[in-house]
Amino acid sequence: MNAGFDQSPSGWTLSPLATFDASKDADSCSGSGSVRVTVDTSTANFGSFSRCATVSQNTQYFWGYQGMQGQQDGLLCELAFFAGTTCSGNQLSSEVLQTSSTFVGVWTTNSASVSSPATAGSATIRCQLEGVGPGWFDQIYLNTENRY
Image (cartoon, rainbow, N blue to C red):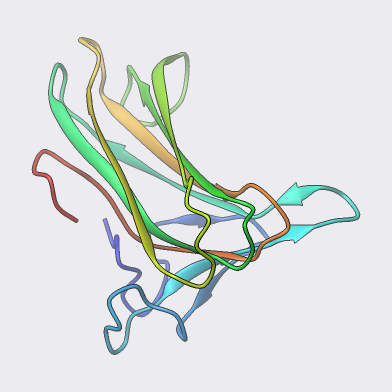
């Protein structure tokens, strides 16, 4: 899934206000990085990025991310399940993880568990900035084991 953005955001779809940042990495890994999100205050467009993943039906998943806020504005990721394998069509269910930390400039972890619906075939993870920013995301995961 390239959860740690090793050398690039390969496999992820980035909006124009989301960019790969090799200078910031939650685990200080050489050759890795994170995705930096910003906002265009004149249009209120928030930086975001997403990825579609295949999932199994009626399965417990663990998901989350490490995030760092540039200001106390917040970060969020949404996990949405779909019936087909292409993350399109009618959404079956979704969950949101928001950073509630007041820490600025510190990597924090946000995680949860969820069971996929009985007809699930795919899921989209979509992450974005919630305020002025900037913000960074790293180690985004969706697994059947509680780890990234």
